[in-house]
Image 1 (cartoon, protein in one colour):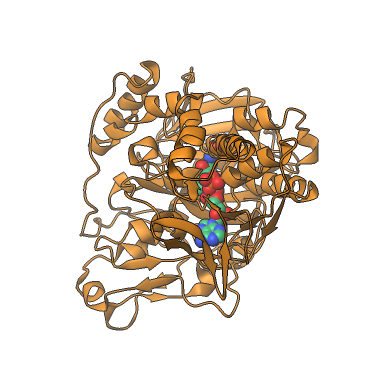
Image 2 (tube, helix red, strand yellow; image 1 turned 120 degrees about the vertical axis):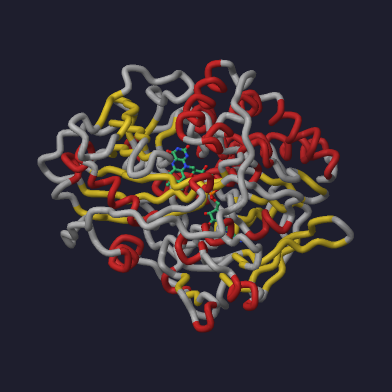
Length: 505
Ligand SMILES: Cc1cc2nc3c(=O)[nH]c(=O)nc-3n(C[C@H](O)[C@H](O)[C@H](O)COP(=O)(O)OP(=O)(O)OC[C@H]3O[C@@H](n4cnc5c(N)ncnc54)[C@H](O)[C@@H]3O)c2cc1C
């Protein structure tokens, strides 16, 4: 098939691109298709609290009442969670540094927002968005990207937009560098108990528990529904629990549990975050292709914001492409650099990305240097930062640590397997091969500490015969954590269909 523009992935970045294209007057008719690997639009995972500066600039009349689960931020707190056994087990910080504040922002569900944005885009007749269609690879001929390959079909286009997120297979195929800093973000959407008193728009950011290095959040949506989640970073080296177990201990912290007890799990999911940001910016443009969103290093680890940044990169690319199309210029690397990258480098996105570039480096030396490094970078706009480099992943399992047992209640505190069925409703359509493969069984056999098993968000990777892990597609939530947790680089994480079946995350 031949089209004018083909997009890989429908996350906030591509939604920003297509929205801006749909608003451009007087463009010649274009055939634009967007392929999304998940089984429907918005079946992804995110927070979300966002200042939505870019989103609101694109959608000035945005009416939050039209988007389920969206509301304005009404209150915001940063809380230091201490061990529950301490007499004072939580401390509300008296002050939120300006770079972290989201008080003028929006609490929403990225899934619901993407369904809204996707509806507007398709309603405008600008693009077709096809979910359930994983792109296997980009077609590259003589150094030029000429389109994409799906199972059984090639789609050729003068421009391929790569917006496949932090662990996308096409983005990695066209990259010239790899991020070294990651986190797995895991969250639950919860029906709060009737007795809950937290108003819609409440935003809590936490740190300190269940491990000093784990950041958490609780955001309240309209209708007595909350998003609760944590980030387990790669600099923690050797987690003593899976992210799922950490999430349960996090929710059980008395500071949060008093609001959650009696609640019910609605949905659940996990996704990797590229925490390297600007320091790991891969090749952003080439002949016939441009990269947007988190895979382009847009997530800001200082402000804790990725959705609006991803959206804005999409808008900036759209503005550049519109300019090139109007001037009748070809979509070459050089022209895309001038039209897209120059815009991006001159914008607030770049200024803030520079301030954030080394903001998290201090965490390689521990929690306190990490927090200090963030404060220094934040208050000095990146001029001062504590420097540090990621260490190679540890090859020994962490020492065992005693954790209290989880008091399963069958509603909110459920087993990992039940979360897959009840909360993730994870599915794997037939007709696709395994998207996680172990490329060198001999290396897997020698690998003493199989972190890919430990870090698998869905228990899809398990101990297999002869110490080569096994993979179960029916349990994979496509978080991609296995990719950056293989110390030997022998795990292939390709594009696959299926995964989570919820548009609330
Ligand atoms: C738990 C969690 C909480 C977060 N909280 C916040 C928050 O509060 N505020 C905030 O601003 N940000 C938050 N983020 C970060 C935010 O989610 C990301 O920065 C943002 O989603 C990046 O958008 P994107 O469009 O670049 O990529 P993505 O959202 O990752 O979208 C990429 C899309 O491409 C699809 N795809 C991948 N490979 C292929 C392929 N081969 N073929 C077809 N489709 C493909 C994926 O399924 C996905 O839908 C959070 C992230 C997590 C995990």
